[in-house]
Length: 152
Image (cartoon, rainbow, N blue to C red):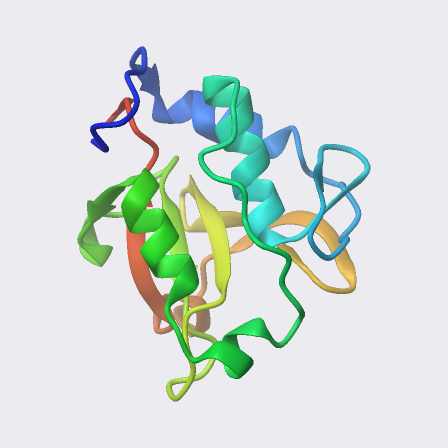
């Protein structure tokens, strides 16, 4: 667990319940307001705020092509600073998975594992949705993380 925060334990079911509360939230780049707008990072940030009552860290403004422009593993690094790093094989319901959408690019998409082969995420053009964590998505997982204090 990151040393900079102290949290009360919570179950993975709480994380999933909070994430499901965002279902139907319209996609909006850089937003993180349940029911109003969120992108994939905004969903993770929003669930974090619901769990802990504060932001883990304030992300800098980012463009849609930020990953290509910077060629830096910004999302994986931030997750590692604020969450508990897991092996990809150990990702379970309530955990965050970060994806590399193409093999030759940095990781730039995130979702919350909802269990039973599903994930909750936000993608441009569709509202926050619960979808299958299909083989296509599984092959693209670049990192897995647990929210601090999650009882597994």
